[in-house]
Every structure is written in structure tokens, then in C-alpha cells.
Image (cartoon, rainbow, N blue to C red):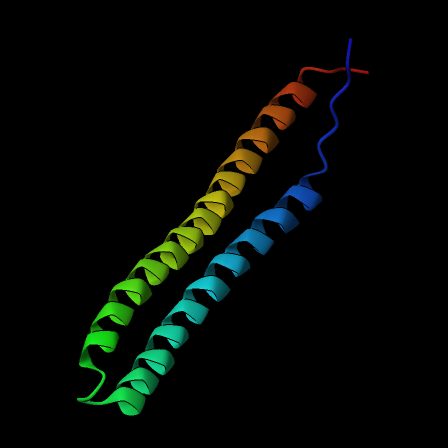
Length: 100
């Protein structure tokens, strides 16, 4: 029979890292949207309206992707949290049935 070992602390660290990545990704996306949007408007002004319009579509698609990535990190963190709680409960229940 194969043995599987789970180190809850390592799994919790992984979950915390995923949560931090989700927050950092969302923050970077928000900063990027504000900074680049203002720069494009300032640089091209009225003359580059067509470019700015095309760029805004590309930027919106990019930000959508960044948002999805941030959501994936957050969902991973939530799944890890739920999984480790379930594992800990099951492990504790199983340990209660073992008598020395």
C-alpha cells in the first residue's frame, strides 16, 4: 500500500502564499489600469483618439485576464483552507480511534 503524508503547516503556507499572490496580482492590475490609462490619455490626447480607443480595448482584456488570475489565486487559497480544515478534522477523528 502506498503511504501519503500531509504536512499541514506546509499546506497552510501554500494557502497563505496563494492568498498573498491573489492580493498582489489584483493590486498590480489596479495600479496598472490607473497609471497606464492616465499616461495614454496624456500622451496622445485628442490627436490619438483612435489609438487610445483601440488601446483601451486591449487594456480591458488584459485587466480581465489579471482579474481572472487574481481570482484563481484567491480560489486556490480558499480551497486549501477548506481542505486543510477537513483533513485536520478527519485526522483528529481517526486518531481518536487509535488506542495504545
